[in-house]
Image 1: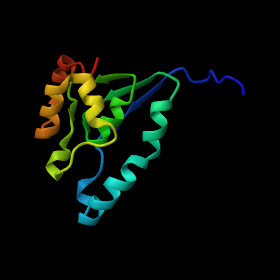
Image 2 (image 1 turned 90 degrees about the horizontal axis):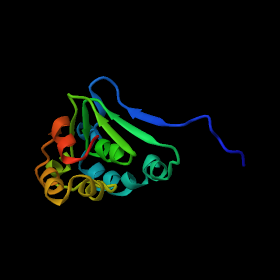
Image 3 (image 1 turned 135 degrees about the vertical axis):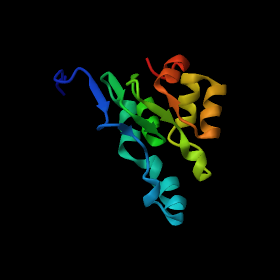
Image 4 (image 1 turned 90 degrees about the vertical axis):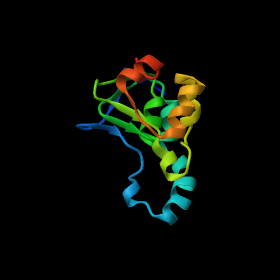
Length: 137
């Protein structure tokens, strides 16, 4: 197999004022919450591929990075954020905790206390707070 040097880095970013906000809660109903989020959620292709990606991956967070969107960003090697970025794990507002490694990666990045605060309150943090906490560079 030939070595592919055509790509040296990949940058993930969003559109306009949103990096990625996870599931569209307005489209989910009780049955979907009980099946899709708990069965299919962990099987999404990007959750299997991105951790195995062999090139540097940069998450350029512009605007909102919530729930699965923040979990996706935390899989990157480097996270950068625009000044207007908001980052959070609002799943607690649905009565669930972050999945797909969200609690583990967040704890590794910001420490137990800040990760618990974010996961248990569902309140987003600003880009400046994310920088102070070590979540973004």
